[in-house]
Length: 631
Image (cartoon, rainbow, N blue to C red):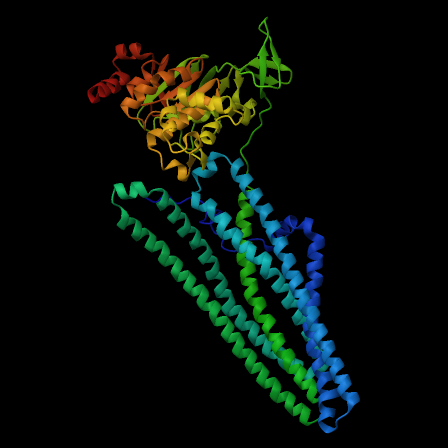
């Protein structure tokens, strides 16, 4: 069923990251991604200022229109006044046209800035996820990582494309309108400021609660998305054990939590606008009454009162917008902070300096480095070349996935070049862990592992892993053709080499019977193929790599006995000349190995070849006897 909860929060960051912990630092981090667009952003800022001021200036012309033209024209008709009136109207039209053009410009430019910024962030995030050690994925679900690309980056997109420009535009409008109100009437401005304090209190109380629930909503969206993804991947298991009702119950719990937080978040958000709207209407009414009294007493002109009333409407609207946009900005910055937390994760540590290079073997046995692929390789330590032969040694290795719990205790073994080493034992004995250490997916805290006499931590990880090929129990196929999936083992392999590898793994026959043969498109992890066929492609992928070391982790577990018999010779050819590590439960897979290691609770309790271990009549004898009974 559902995986154990990760030690991190549902959005991929540490628990408790509901709000941005450092708004200033996060804003600076986002600004770093936008620095290449700084001149474009300057143009955006100028356009925003122009748009906001155009609106303020257009409103201020109301006083001139009413006091200087409309009122006099009502008393007497004058061509001169009419001409001036038309010119003022034309001027106002030009002002609003400039404002409209400026609005289009900054919105259009911000689309480009936001998409380029998010492109860079996605690139950095994806590259970091590729560089993180497997330990990170042991403690984070796929849903956690996917929510970074969907929820968190999407909220940041809204902030960059809409919220930032909205906040700047609103703030400039508020400042401009406030200055103009002071200019027109300080008495009415005091009244507006008093009402404004009441409005800000409402924003703080209602908007603050809304922001908390919006953050909670974002977190629970991550929980729901992660659970849905996990359940979709596990549909076969769910149906096999008829756990649909249990899945529905668990989903209902998560979905109900999301519904509650979303309801509360949107309830407070939807309350805010009507409350602010009604307060602005009250402000407008009170201002109109007081302004009317001042006009009657001839303290203010009619045009001044009308313009001030329009400023009042314009003044309250941006404040409401700012309060809403700030919630969106905080939510977006919280998402950005979670993304940056992952980007700042320590990548897989690699202090190795030794490289693997192609070489030719001279008549006297010496090695010469070359640029083209020859099939022979050497470890290059400065100018010293050591032939890559595939000798692997474990010397008193101690390892645990958690510091206080060891999985391997004092493992010592060696594999000579070309030998086949098999690991058998109960589940959890440490068989797969040993092969993971050879790949250096994890570093050992005690003991050492050497390849061709070189400690593996001195070898660059990519070069070490290029010397190995691996067939896992769970086969993963990528979207693409059959040819491309096999070539994944060695990208420079020719079509003929791919076909040769498929024949070696006995996959060529079934591939030719596919609709488009080697050009058949595979999707959804190759679900159109049987488990055995997918495993054969994985074996072919390892065969095309032509590496000196081969790791088979239950490589034939999904292949029936008849198919296994057909490919056993191919497997033998695949392992010929390679140092091979085999994990298997089937006796036929391990009995021909040069050495068999029997593991129990992280220790090697028996070692030897098949005949030697049978004579000892120990654990291996019991396992093999059980297998004989099964067959």
